[in-house]
Length: 446
Image (cartoon, rainbow, N blue to C red; front, side, top):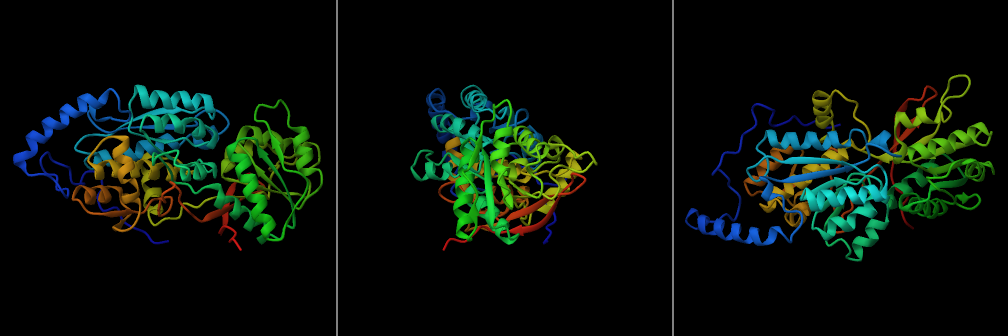
């Protein structure tokens, strides 16, 4: 893997001094006072009616909406930490628009209602310009309309439902939506390619009954059948609030397919897989998993066999690959600053926060509209490819075009807010450990 050294380190990064900005298109000093007065008058009039304006708070305000409790908490614990690290890094090299960036964290609880309420607080009370989140597609679905209505930029690090692509194509988001993880249109095709690669001919499906689960299931079935595979039985969908999942486990595993494609959340999904084992349904059946349960905590939740092995030993899964040129540098920074293991989707949270700060700097505005107007510019070609966050924002301050290359990948975002990536294949060992064993690309359309 190609490695880049950080161009600026804490302590020797160039600090931005007042009056030292060199952006393209700046006005002459003779007109600055008049423009400043005009801008101040306009901001007074607009502040009461335009959401996402964080300039009044002394600098750019961002928020996070992440699952620190609830069904996805096992994977979400490090998300807000990654966003805070991004903010601290940019603040250490001068901040955004000559001021420090502040970050306000909210827990989505992996619950659409709670997530919508939290987004309302971030947008209407805290008046943030952008939000890193949500993670669960169901929470983002419930929250994105609040963000759009208040002109707050929302960049999700993991809401992968294809529904967002469709809604963006219908013009529902007006540009206030993007994501740093590719949609399940691609991951479901990658899981189908993995099933085909492993020689599975008959596969059944079980999915959590929400936007994420159903969207993924449909895309997987279509892609797997294109490879010549057969879907066994009817798709099984489970209610996340069900008291037991024995009947769903039997329906998914009972016909003894080669594999079961299981689109799960951790807490409820672990109950389903444990039930399949305890009732003898899963013997000899490989479980195919997705990004939502890529966590050692999930494997522990499923449990062990009487002889101490993981119940789901041998299970295979896919997760968006974090394989950009910046990953090695980010991994070193993460370890140095947090002393934590680099877990799934942490790079995607970092990239989401960095992109919004770069866009705010490029637009010279600490608003959601400002971020929206420039986020595609800083994420895509043309421009200088740059991996270091401080180097990137320094170039933006000088008025140069950049093409930011993120820790999660190249983060080339299209007009629908989507990125396309490759996928890591992970496997559960007998001792419950997770290891990446391969990569896989989505099934190509005929």
